[in-house]
Image (tube, rainbow, N blue to C red; front, top):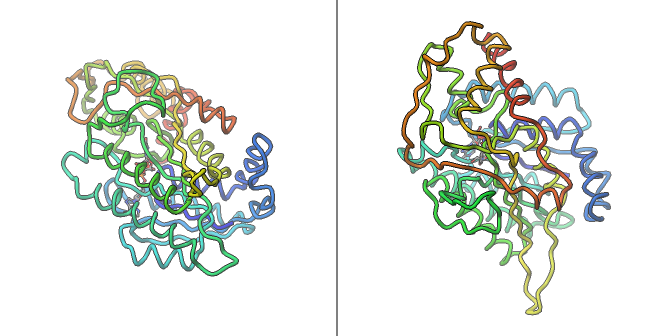
Amino acid sequence: MNILVTGSAGFIGANLVLRLLDGHFAELQSIVHGFDGSQYAAQAATFASLNILGLDNLNDYYDPSLKQYRLRLIEAKAKEHPEHSYRFVKGDIADKALVDSLFEEFKPDIVVNLAAQAGVRYSIENPDAYINSNMLGFYNILEACRHSMHQESPYTGVQHLVYASSSSVYGGNTKVPFSTDDRVDNPVSLYAATKKSNELFAHCYSKLYDIPTTGLRFFTVYGPAGRPDMAYFGFTNKLLKGETIKIFNYGNCRRDFTYVDDIVEGIMRVMAKAPARSKGSDGLPVPPYAIYNIGGGQPENLLDFVNILQEELVAAGVLPQDFDFEAHKQLVPMQPGDVPTTYADASALERDFGFKPRITLREGLRQFARWYKEYYG
Ligand SMILES: NC(=O)c1ccc[n+]([C@@H]2O[C@H](COP(=O)([O-])OP(=O)(O)OC[C@H]3O[C@@H](n4cnc5c(N)ncnc54)[C@H](O)[C@@H]3O)[C@@H](O)[C@H]2O)c1
């Protein structure tokens, strides 16, 4: 079983590779198999030994030393698990020649595309990065999946492309919880527009070339060694420096937070069961295409979230007991690109994969605060 993970030095990608190396995928395969049917039964043995290729361009959108740290964790884990093979390539998914040659040589069975320019706010000032990585890069991945079908047998090409979409595709939708059946034609940032475009591109490739694809709309993923551009991490950095944190929309925002381990478990379950290929009455493929939300399903008010974060930062010893939080908080208006609420209806994931996120915000922020203390001292 050859698995290509793009964005493997990123927050979610690195956590995914770590869990794959742990052998958790073999367990999950049998759970998903037992839950639903037989799709991967014939290949069960191959899950016990994985060939993992990680690809990442290690860009400096945020501190690249965090990416190096995650790669070191992966290398250490790979040494503990000689039953799997792991290789990392530094490279860009926008580089078509590189992507094509990696597919040709590695022959992935499953591709998990997590490489992207993330972040809503950054997309307002730096649109080029989004077009390169999220549009051109994703197109290159789709094309390489298409051409993989024509490589020499016994390799039969990519059996499942799983890719990251985002809750941001719901834009300013007011009907909650957000369901994958809702219309998502009103993005409020270029980032959201690129993610919605990825879903459209994937549908087209599923239909035309019968490539099984699953898009996952992640909802505010957080955890240890996460992304410093996200609120929980940025707030922590600022509070530690004695700076004031800005709470947008005067705190009247709700976010559906999802702990990274829950996201990874969701991704792995989805990886193990591709949408089935079938033919329609016209003899052409019915697109083997799916979209799921992965979110905690319990949106938190931003002020409550900040309260929990500060309690856990104090408990972990990141901030002193007598830290004056009130003096370091500023309530400010909404900013462009942001949305007031995110709230996942993740019932389809539960129905099809028997899984729903279970880690509470307090538990998750506790893990983050402890990691922060250990990492930054
Ligand atoms: N973290 C979240 O809350 C969240 C929410 C919704 C969607 N997502 C999506 O999930 C995916 C992973 O997000 P993350 O939080 O781990 O972000 P991340 O920035 O930590 O990880 C993305 C990785 O991709 C790499 N990368 C970027 N462009 C690349 C390119 N052109 N070629 C090769 N590598 C490239 C980066 O160096 C980075 O290591 C992204 O697609 C993101 O848009 C994340």
